[in-house]
Length: 394
Image 1 (cartoon, helix red, strand yellow):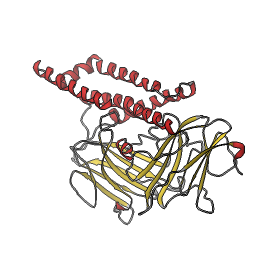
Image 2 (cartoon, one colour):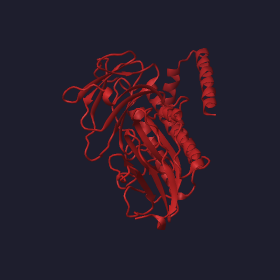
Image 3 (cartoon, one colour):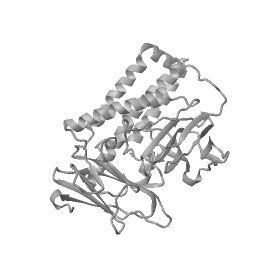
Image 4 (cartoon, one colour):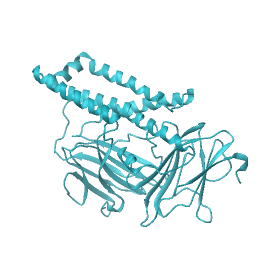
């Protein structure tokens, strides 16, 4: 249905261009008129209003608590969309920003990750410079398209881990171009729109994230004044993001309800199209617990670079990891003597290790990740069971 919608939109755009040509006008003339008349802002506001229909998508919880969180979710996405596509949307002067962080969340954002994004263009070449510091993992990814478009965020270039060549002081330089250049090369293509940096902590309070800077290799020192064209396109992209991203994840969350309180492997083609890391195996699902119930997850982790588990609300926002224990990983988990891990999700602290707090939620989504499995190792599906609190063994 979504692809069909975008097909009709492309057809309408074609006939619009023909109509403008016959009237002797250009798209730029219409954009100027829309800015001056206020129509561009009115359409942006109308699109935001339509984004609210996601909160009534089939399967979404309708109680006041979760609808309130849903409204906050939309305000967060609006803030992120305006910053990404209006304030920082000049591909000639890109800036690394944390688009997803403690107060902007989406798509099961990983609390162990320190995300950076910068808007770029396949028409340009760029240089990233920085120092790696002590972060456990760092990866650079270019992607084509945006949330809400037909292709989603399609993977393009990847440079990560030991493939990143460092100087003696841990500094580095990366060239973003269509053909290989320099010690460290990150591929871009004609439709490349974003570069994403994922830094993953194994021990959050002990590691320092990388210092990063990105620049356009044009030699131009200062940006041009904002144009009406850039403003209108920015508003359109922001509105499409606010409407498209929550719809995408609402569809996912509805599908997860088919296997509530289980953790089956998620289709990698779907996760990659939504901007996921192709070297991570994801297990997404829906969880639901009564006050006297516990979700107990059993697994013996295979040899891998890292693993983690996190709890989210229904809108696929990670719960508030600033104040609550809502995630666990390879570095901070407590293991049993045989190498197994038992994770316990309950509403109140049960006095046992590896506890995950529901933060007052009675349902939501959850995610398990295996990062970069060792050669020859197979992914393992975590075993889940719901038991009564009185049956938890101290």
